[in-house]
Amino acid sequence: MKITRTVVAGAALALLAAASWQPTATAEVPEQVSAELWAVPTAPAETFSLIIAYSFGNRLPEGVDPARTVGEPGPVNEALADAVMAARGDRDIPVYAQTEIAEVLRARYGLADVVAIAPDRTPDGTLVYLSTDGVAARVAGLRGAVAPTDVAGVVAFHDHLWRATRTTAANGFRAYAPQGVAMPDRYDPQSGQPWTTSPVLYLPTDYAGRLRLLLNGAAAQGGH
Picture 1: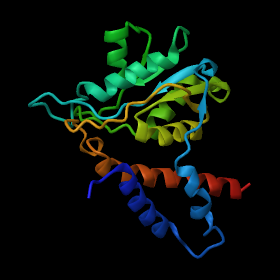
Picture 2: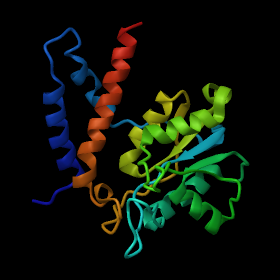
Picture 3: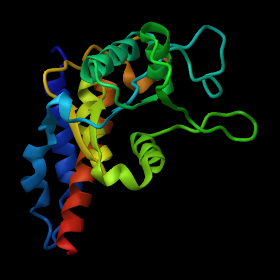
Picture 4: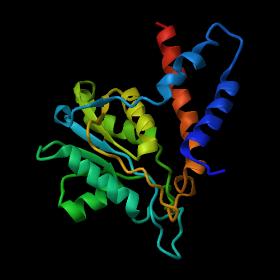
């Protein structure tokens, strides 16, 4: 049987629903939120006051230490850079992009003022993995007091877009994917990050993250 996104999604959601079911007053939440696991909030690109671009995978040159090397952008991040420019158009709005995308924006499009969001390093030079939430939090810190009034256009790999958009919103932005701008959806089997090489390896973790976001949001609403 050919393994597709739909097959992986169904299996992941079945496991997640079972794992999340608890005999409490909020036990109905998984059924209520399941439909929301697919809908990505969108808005016209011209409404954005900034763009936040999340990388997906990389390419590692032979012989480098992946624990200390960010890596080269690779085809997916090159396509994400293209999506950034499509969403930005001719408007002079700030762009915050993870390093792999920022490099392409500078080299291919001459976007010198892009703000690169790079991972931290430990004192010995080891990279500290920068999560989706970590990127959103970093940008929120850079935007400061204007973040709640921002309308953030989110650019991310197709299967990452839901979580990237909702995570950006959870960090204080009004966040949307750009209407009419296609996001890359072909996995790179040569990516230096194994979990980004195929839907089989990526989607279960992504769906777990989606469910956590929805359950946390439902819990926060219930506490008001």
